[in-house]
Length: 259
Image (spheres, rainbow, N blue to C red):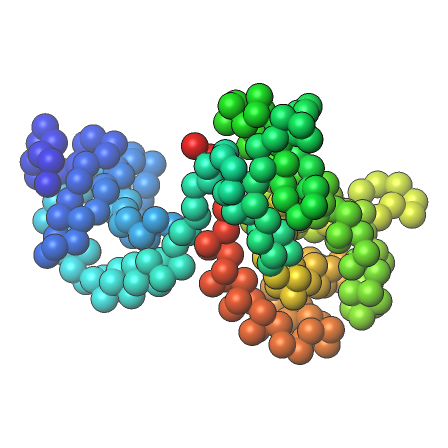
């Protein structure tokens, strides 16, 4: 453990604590009233403690919750993202609707700042490929445009199955979420808005359909109570199998990192 000014307490905002082989980042706060533990998305461990608590008390708390920490850490390690980093070079593989497309850096067909799908290849110009952030933005824009076009033909059948009004559609960057639904805003006849994250469109179609059906179910039921899953099951009886497939394949998708 990195020793603070007073080795028996935690006056500093962050320290490192090791207890029986477990390493935890310690976050001390004068506002906090209780000690708590979290397992972060990258499987690291954090101890949250009120400022001034003793290290002995912290160690005792960690030992008392060791089994819970180990179980949660294994779950995090099993589901943590394995997102690849993509090269902006000829032959790099990108996926769309579960199919593989290779990148072609071409001066002849890749002029301008857009990415285009030509003869089974994603084409961008060499000037664009030489600017990683601009190239990334162009690739994301292509996924947004292609995903929006594809989904436009899928909403009506799923909305009919679920007995809901077809919402407006948006495809954009949603961070670590696959989709979201916003109810109608003020105004007579206004529709809700369903947003889908662009990385979703790398997946096979049946898994994208699961996310579409999931978000459409929110048109009728907010939250994830039993009535939500019951409604989703009426339209998609195998939703649990598809949700598991999304959890497994989703953590392996390209999320936009380039080199």
